[in-house]
Image (cartoon, rainbow, N blue to C red; front, side, top):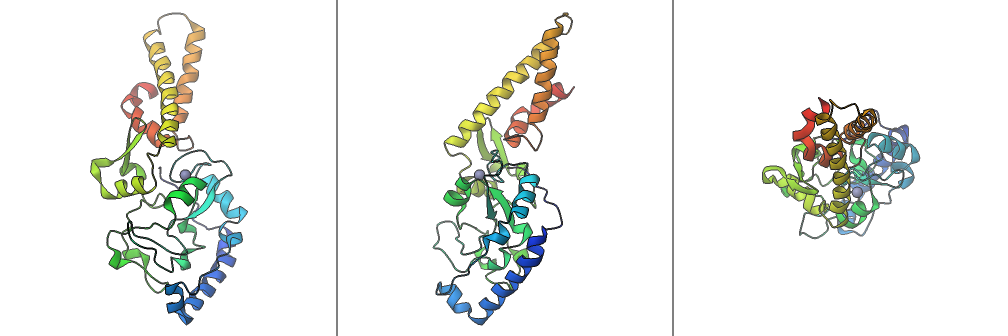
Length: 262
Ligand SMILES: [Zn+2]
């Protein structure tokens, strides 16, 4: 996971239709809170608003076509994901509670793009808090006092919480938020470390070429020096936010940075 910088101005669709829908959800809830809490009444959210093409495109661009959790390249295949779940929520190991954060269903700050895998299979309605008693359970409460256990990539830098030893993600100095995030989202599930490993292996090869060229810079093998220059440029691109698995790449190669850049 890396920090995500979304444009500060939300897409027009959310500002207009999203705001109107939010008002209508809030007044429906106020008229009959018990029915929404028991599940007798369920909100019907309009995905044509929160998942509108203009919203998706803004997220695709801000996230460099990558999943907000896995950093896999997903292109245009991602799902619009609600950081705070809209229909119902769950503390880890606890039963499902209703309603969810219905008033945030069309809020720009609450939306990200995720691959269908982590959105549907893993995150689902999970939204654990450090202190569940502080949970905002309706639009009359403030989310500002909540202390979510999930790292919010739009508000904080995930790289301060989650590190990488090779292809494996770990919680830096065992911090609880990093640990909960990586466990719940299964950042070390089988196919993901494998994909990171393939990436890191390729980068290691590029790095070796760069190192070889550095020790060989007295020779007049112009062709090899040219290849090494390409390798160095590819390596530098791999550390940028728009590269797949850039957090793992940055952390694993951090120690070598001065040599590569220098
Ligand atoms: Zn994902």
